[in-house]
Length: 287
Image (cartoon, rainbow, N blue to C red; front, side):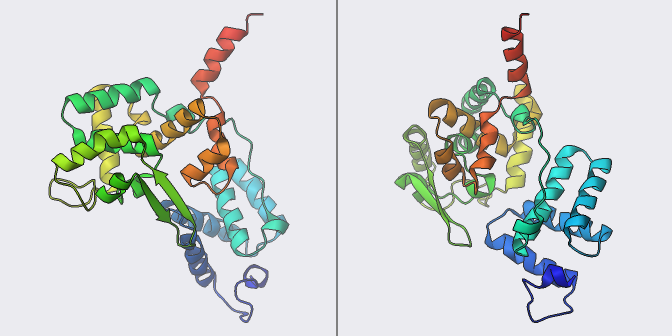
């Protein structure tokens, strides 16, 4: 374990894995990772150390081979991301970094609400007077915010047309509210008497939770006959990204707007879904 913890605990010879993982957890939190991502990364690192006592290149490759024998490629890549984050924390990523598996990029785009279903959903929500969820969906799809960011939005943000979000590391990301959204949202807020404070609250006036939004979206998808697997908060963030690139093909700007640390993450939106691939092959392969 000395090789593992030297970069973090230079003056300690007997630091436990639990102590190191607590520091790793704090390191991840400072980089503004979501709670679910942090839990996943900690689980992945603990999994490695259940199999191998020391972090070495050989052990990492053996562990990767073991993962390939026991798990699907997406799970293997999830564990690899966990370990690579831990290696960065230990300042060993240049020496030990694991390569992810190359997969057909379909996991996200195959389960993103189509533009047609999105337009149908917001039309039905508006017709049925479900205005809170109408604007939840509109804000998600028109700004690309994460649902954890959505619930923090305030009426003042809509009025000024943007919201600056700061990570714990001091990095700033600006979320813009397009004029087409503001023209609808501002009169709704005014009519509801929401000139200040959080936009999305429940009937008791409490802040709506991400879990509550996720659950209600499933109910609404079932009500309107839209595939439930395509209706969840992050699907509308994906819809924003796909539509943005369709209108303005600037992957670097999109990465900034979404708050991605790397353009490589954003490149998923340059691929086609399985259905789009099938339609393309059907249309061009005639030999």
